Image: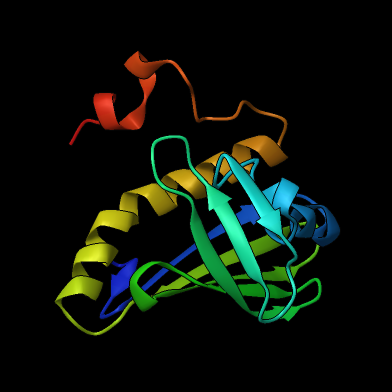
Length: 151
C-alpha cells in the first residue's frame, strides 16, 4: 500500500524554510504556477474563474478555481472531475500540503496511479525553485522524465 495514496485521495507535504507570503506567490499566481507546475498559465485566481494551463507536449487545459482562502489555500477542478487543493500551514518554516481527490471509479484510480510520480516531481521542482535551485524541468530530450525515467 502506498502511504501517499489512500483510497481516492493522494496527499503529500513538503517543509519549506520560507515565509508563507513567498510560497503563496508560487501557488496562487499564474506566473508562480508556471515556475513549477506548467509551462505557462493564464487567468485570475479567484473563485469560479477559469485558468488556462499550458504544457509543451500536451493540449492546453482549462481548470476552474473552486476555492481561494487568501494566504492559506487554493483549490482547482482538475482532470477527469478530480480536485487539487494546495494548503499552507505555519510560517518560516511553512508546510505545504497537497491533496488531490479523484473520482471513486476505474478512471479515478487510473489517474491517481499515473499522476502520483508527476505530483512528487512537481513538488520537488517547487522546492528547488523556491530555495534558489534549478528548474528541474528541461528542454533537453535526453534528460526528460518520460525518456529517462527509471522504474
